[in-house]
Length: 495
Image (cartoon, rainbow, N blue to C red; front, side, top):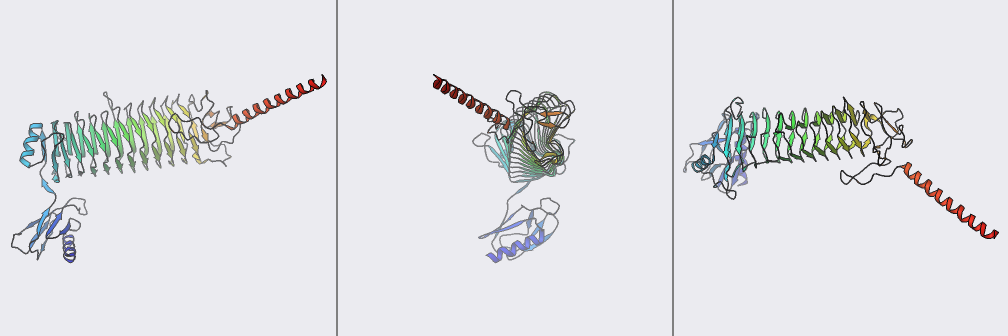
């Protein structure tokens, strides 16, 4: 049996390159269409002249190569995936009708959804592979491969799988490649789940949401597209996706109201994108947390207001986090390190809170403020060896630059600023304690780095100046007490 398995696998792969895999399971021969040729197109196998009493079959590959399987005996041949034409469903009644005609299981309820699975769909240059619209029944589309939907001039714009005005849908474990867009949710589509899909090599976006709300986009891989995930909508959750090697990784966009707001973008990996890892444009009140943005043109770009950006890792980009025309954002507990230019840059951006962030080994400034950016609060951050400076530097270079002024580099109430690893420990409490290029200064540098448990943080380490002050007060108090004691004893002796 092992010898037969090896011979058959060798034969099929020699006929079709890497087009198929052959499995021997007792008395059956199973051929699964799971491989690809060198051009990245799926190729299946077909069989002819196969009968119950035949000992051989002609096997054909879509790439045009044929071969012969001999001495099959009574083995059976089964293919997993089913070639299918493009699917268009409009309305609940149409869904029920097509489910019946195609033998799809389920009845459209939450406990028993319709299931469309294991289809291979070549859209043949049309505008869609699977297009479902105007439904509220429950359904699942899974384990399908959809490609070659490239007509972007005709709705739904060359999309592998498109949901329009749809609720209660689930797309899982599908592969969408070589389309204009991989997966698209639009026109008030809501309460859908898009999970574990692979959207790669599409001309536009891997996953595209337009006027879509309350959807969950999770554990998808979007690579080698123009854009990984594009979102115009509110109250969506985008989590645990890998958006790498695109032009942009994740884009949250608004043009005119209603804005894209109240979205949660968390635990995503955006790497190797030529422009931006994550991009917020005119999109307020969103949460970006625990995202890994490394090796992009820019890690995170914010052209928006009132967002919370926390615990993100922006490493080895040209700029870690870039703010343009951005106001009232809260930026906390991020790590912006190893970037080839700036850890963080602010341009035309005011009244932002920049607290408890780490900046390490950025080639230029850790924070660079320019172009009318005022009223920003910059407290309790840690700066290590940015702008090629460190503890041993003596050339008066600074780790940050504020070309504008009017920003707050220390807390005037608590007398605490930021930790700078090149601070020499002198002049605490006056303007020359730590000079920032451009004319700003930190009067109250911290003696130790800040490691908060939350963005509100524990009280930062007490400075050496405060220690000396307290020690001096203590020594003075003890001295006064001793003098008073000796004076009393002397008066007693004289009496």
